[in-house]
Length: 120
Length: 120
DNA sequence: GTGGGTACTTACCCCGGGGTGAGCGAGCAC
DNA sequence: GTGCTCGCTCACCCCGGGGTAAGTACCCAC
Image (tube, rainbow over all chains, first blue to last red; front, side, top):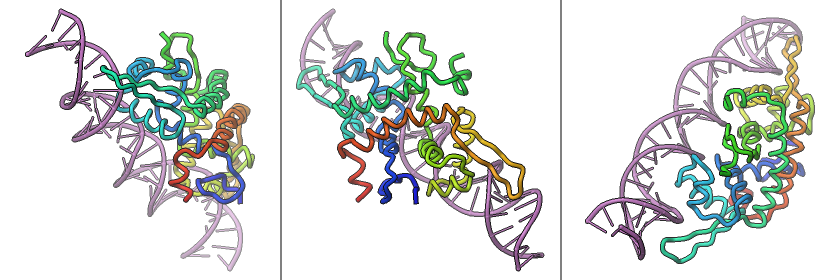
């Protein structure tokens, strides 16, 4: 059978996309990735300002998940006021690179749906 | 300011990823894409069998959205019992291609989190 | 003392994506 | 007649991801 690769599927049809989708499966994760790619070593507040609309709670939880997923690196300095710097790990950089074709597709695609209702 | 490209953002920083994320932003969409790439011109029931766990409602709604997004093509034959064939459009094929680096990343990545809890 | 800035956490609410189960309309096998 | 297949739709429920607002601990400027 070729049933794609649901997690733990024993057959050879490994597509790996769902693994990646779990890592970037958060409303802001690809944007965080992109932001850290464009602006390396940002602090929490800077990141929040780079992502207008994100809430502190969501930014914090997304960063923690991405850290646990090994795509974001967190360094906390013992200072007052506190300073924490976030950056992409090597794996995070590779993930961001892997997202570029997708971004290119999004940019080049014929406007089918979605845009006419949003960018009015 | 470089605030990434929230929809309608006027500055030049177009990353396009969020456009793509909207199109593939459904629990089963990348799997449908992959399935139609591996098995072109499948009927509804075949697709359902290719994606164990998906419900008819979700498969139907996903397919409709993907059709509206221009990545899936639907052909209905006037037969009894009814026959409907789904395939990828050119844009859908390109989207699937654009997902391959992501899939490769998912396959090659060092096991960080997620796997040890699932494929145990 | 008040306010501001840092990097968060906590409690709460809400909406919608997705799962469940049933129904439909046509024809064919029996 | 009953039942089966096919490709859906409809009504319903439920959970959790994400938004809102407030609180925390520390120090500095005023």
